[in-house]
Length: 434
Image (cartoon, rainbow, N blue to C red; front, side, top):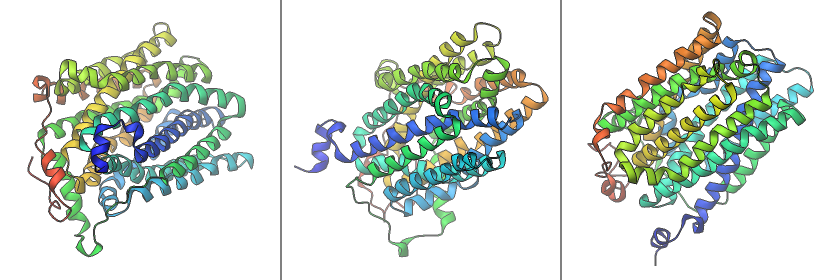
């Protein structure tokens, strides 16, 4: 009996390579949760960052998706994704270690944070494209929903535990040394990924075509499919709004609402329970309302949940932020699991890196622009009015999927599955017609 047949019949927990990817990913996302709180707290409390400087810091962390997001996909499709993941973890760990080192030497500045944020962002572009494109290489197409749900469950566990753990570490050892813990997490993650046994087939360098042609193929696949186009528009707009609000969130909670960093970590952790529930209930929700309808309905729900952030300034802030964050986290995870599984299932394997990079470029490219907008509005209008503007942008993000064929669909199309399974690298260099 073939390995693939056994994989179809058994749980992914018995799949060696998936376990390594899952363990590495889990450790890595725990580390990312630590710096997700430690770096902005360090900037606000130790370096006295202004709203605009916070917006610039977040923008620089995501700017690489706008600058190199498209060619990254074509490059990743040419490389061994396992190596990209290993070296991505190791180089990010080394970069992050410069922050506690500079702090210990009393030479840490905002400018160094900017450089580290941009550098780690550049590496993360390649890492994330390879990460999303690697799963379909090691498991079967009909296991993608289960695999993505398991990865999201561990990621959401990290978002539940991570902020509270980060807040505790910040209070105990300080934000610079908390960043050092993240470096250790990334190094350990690379160790697990190195244990994956799957051997990738890399395209013959002599058969490669010009980079711009390969980039165009990825964009054409995404923009040429009506449902992918609408999903991409919804995700990109919501990310733009989220980054505008997120750039100001730590200042808003610590200064405007007057809460402590420990309370902030507790709020993030409590709200993230909704995401954990979303990871384990996404499949059931999709069966209940229909796989197609799950996308616009969850988009509408995370838009509503975003209202809690500015409303916290007028009513009890802690419960308001927790309740709103809970529903928002649940809806975002349901949305992500459904649409990511759909596009992974739809896309031919030789095109996965370019497809994922094209979508990342289109949906993460707006993030630095939103962060700069949020920081600028925070300086000009004030923090709370700027957050209201960002919340209004959330309402616009759901429109592309609410007013689309998705709202009337139970099942998402699977017409490209056969092509993805049967087409080899030599036959699938051009994007199929949707």
